[in-house]
Length: 421
Image 1: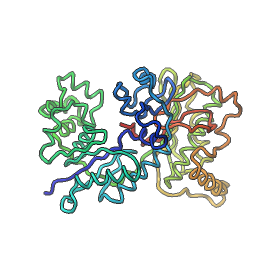
Image 2: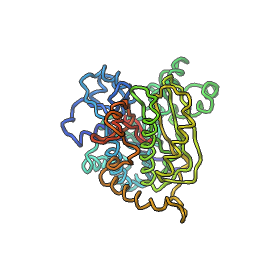
Image 3: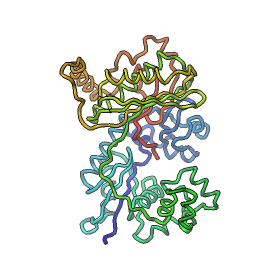
Image 4: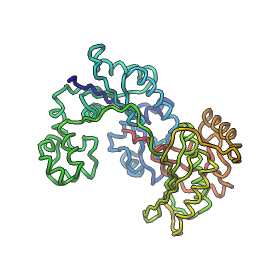
């Protein structure tokens, strides 16, 4: 049986790299992308800041204590998506089988390419083309499976390349600490350390049944990954299951009018995202997190739709049913799920059909001038006084562009984006 050749490619410090393309003065400077408030988090950081211990998903307050001279940028998720799409298009044009794992991460199945070009040489050439044509730097790893290739990429970032030859997977992984395995998070790593397991080599020698007793079904997967076994295929298409946006307030709020306006704006943005994807939602969920961190959600099933005038009232209705505690609210969010491909079915006698040309015109303006170039009046604050009452927000992936008037809030990005590594 022919050995597989799986390449993992990852854009180096992607969000920061895009910002540096847009402003070359940032090159060589310590840069952090993320929410600028005390409750904001680091969405991405340059390698200059990582030398001080700054990491993705770290609270911004802690990051600035570690690196007080860092330049903090709110970020522009639209720009990141555009650059990601450019990279995706270039890779798709040349590679035979591609899986886009996240906004800045790709798996390529190059099995059989050795006869024609060579998988390693092909990955080098592809990386050079991306650098030359788009200006973004990538690192890559090559091995017989996804796990080992991803570990190899992370091992040589930034601007690195590494090949693990067939049969050397276990030896390559053995000296690494267990948290280098992609599926092992902080909690699992701590449990393993409590068991005296620090390195992957030790984990690979553990009896599989012991890991299964401790971690359940995940124990089998842990043992396989530690032994360099990963039979997952490269999947060329993965349908998105949901879209969501949420906002965390710097100061908790009970202003119901303000909260409704923000929910309306979040819903408007998600509706636009749906129409861009040619999809409709048939399930809406509203999320509320109170100041004591109690989190509650309510959802409703609806006829498939991507229209603001149908979705926003449904979101308002869910919020009215959900918010009955009259406590300070820390976070609110909206999620669309049960996504269906295709256009909304309109009733001939439904007044909503008359709004289709309006949505098309608004979407055309947004496509050309940006998502926040035109907004529903219900999403805007009625006065400067009300705008001043809106707490700043910590965004995990994106922020409202300068000059936009949506209550001065910073909004979280699409749910499919990953924290930049």
